[in-house]
Image (cartoon, rainbow, N blue to C red):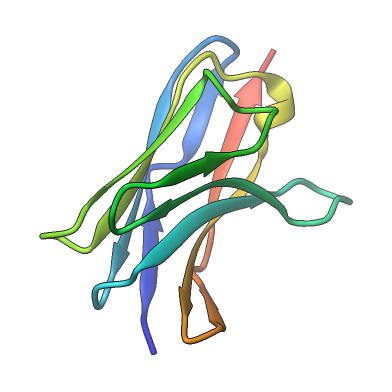
Length: 112
């Protein structure tokens, strides 16, 4: 098992930036960020492995950067050039032995 705690959400104007953090209670090979907007399904934002292989949704490529500090068991999401359509609850995800774990989520709101 693993516990995941997100932080860093908030309210920002369009074009602004935010940085999310996800602290894990143990080392995890595969981690990622997902988001869920009201009335929509949860969707992938970005994933990263412990060897720093990354994957991004097309909608965030070139604007968001996922990274991790393995010494701190922490993953980050740097979000730049934010758009109102990025408004959602952002969830940290970890996959261990095919089991999926989620954080509590952090709200990101982008005003136009």
